[in-house]
Image (cartoon, rainbow, N blue to C red):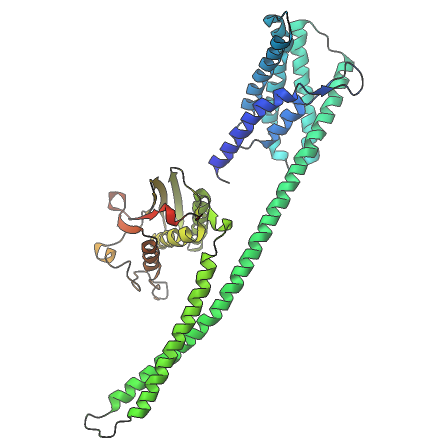
Length: 435
């Protein structure tokens, strides 16, 4: 999950907490006698603090404390005929110190590090609540002249224990549900991958047969060529029927290759076009996948490459395989182009009905002569350590896919004439789920 989505979730939790905790604080009961009150405000507050990920919990504690005091004063104002603001404030202001101290200690101890240790988490919750209650009692003692008794301390301890383990029960149930849900999702993804690999294996069998046929027809075509060139110009006997049969056989095998290719194309097209919700993803997650994949690729090649990503504007969920196949090809080329160390930038921007991808690097760049050829099938300037050339189909494939999507792709020099910059503009409508 990216930082922006986590922060949005934290803000939602904060807003919900500011309304829920003051209301829960008014729900109380007396399980033992008329003086021992158990309120739901404290356990609700503890539960919400456990949910925060990015926002420092001191801020929610400060805001909740203020709202709790204000809410109780508001209730007095609406329910009491002879309402006195100062006396009402004096009665409730100590609650602020309880919630603020609770949140401060929660932050100071960094309780969120112990989510995997429920027993320790519960004990820490008990200690924090007791200390927060003592701070509240001290404020009342110095402000209102109340006394702190051993009986009060015992009640505080019992309430803290009940609050802490009540909250942990619900929290662990929620975590258990999340883990089970995540497990189901992973199992579903694994099943999908298994079916995908199974289908690809089936198509690979057809592809292997096509390759064998292509090898056979190449040999027979060469044999026919040798026989034709070996004929003398004045030769009177021309084996027309025999050569015709051989040519017909070659044509039949070419037709067989065509049919096999049609079967492969149909099978692969079905795999790619069977779109479901899982085929579309948030662009932040997509770019993260591209970066993580190519970081591993760079390490495999022994290169130190920094990846910089920038995403501007709001984006819908894009088709996973389309975006990955286009952007990953170019980023992988950039990784291969950089000699030992460098940087690669991946920038996205939404412009009306289009999305623009910019992939740049500070590698050796592309010569003006090569810029005219890089999108042609078979062209390559990359060779491995053994001197074998690359296939040269990566960028030609990218250009073909971009044009099929009614987009355009251009390449230019990077900033200050160093490296290269690929710019791809695609209609958003061709990347999102239809219907």
